[in-house]
Image 1 (cartoon, one colour):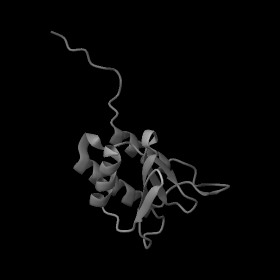
Image 2 (tube, one colour):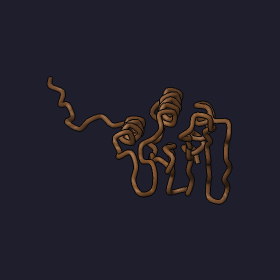
Image 3 (cartoon, rainbow, N blue to C red):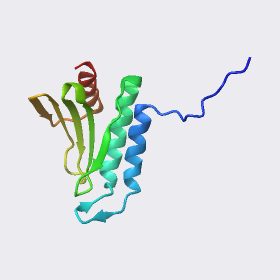
Length: 130
């Protein structure tokens, strides 16, 4: 018996998110609006939080859109269009600044200033269940 293998590459939501983060490093350093590449501290923090969250969540981890801000910080956004909800992780460019997590569902929103992988997992699971 022969088992056919798919020629389509494996692509989980965490793989997509990690590839998007790495792609930020390949951007031009700057453009007319500011810095395009993330700072090393923002990149390391984002990678650590995503990997730790994935290890806790497994296949329930949702893919995130990623971008940099004008100073080299990283923003990861997980969203569910159907319910008008999102979780946004902001990793600042400067290692002396603290990351924060923004979450919203319709008109209800708040900011978490104590960001850990555990807190990120809680809000991503909240979004999954909404």
